[in-house]
Length: 301
Image (tube, rainbow, N blue to C red):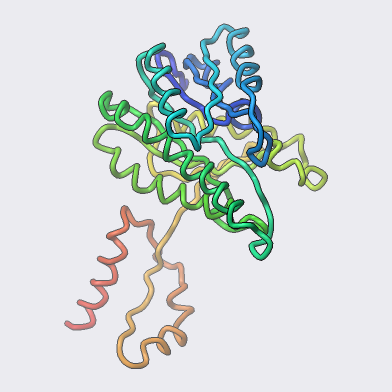
């Protein structure tokens, strides 16, 4: 099976460099018309210029593809809406959205200013919300859509000095979980990509990483699958250095504990609460409550 995107239109945010650039070039090479969005700011989100997006568009066009540049900040609802309207005016559809735009403002939680926490949340989480909301009804009307949220191992598993970034990245997983359920009837498939790659976002770690193995291009094949016609939905795909794994949020079988000493029962049996034997991946949040109710009902038989 060859994955192609002929006739499709894709919007890739943060596509002026790094992972976004790699994604945009690959989508265009496989036939997609691509909106290359990039604010052109610094790693911390300051400044801005359309030159980065325009350079990627030039690369795509030089290779025979079709693309248009856009320098909207994903934090600006009106600018995002205008980007989508310009896309519709030119190409009449939006089939794929890759929420890739991001910033870093790393500090330990004790030293972090609330404005830095809020700004990182605004870019990663609300930026994805703004872009997704702007294309959602278009995809519903066409009964087709492929959306990817860029999460991170920092959100899934934590990382020192990245409480803001990790919170935003895990929030995107929650957004994906619900949107994949709500979009299913209209064939809108929503997934998360958790990349490991050497970009300007990780340049401070350069001396400690085998950079030759961490090109963004080794992550992009995972993105291409997640936005393909036969894509899964509700998948957290980890990718880096040519390795691809799937992350899950699971639920153990747990225990039943009631009564005056329920807290003590939990403490005494926490190994059983934590035992991963027979753990499941719930289809939706209500599954947790159903499992808990079944324990209670079984105890009263």
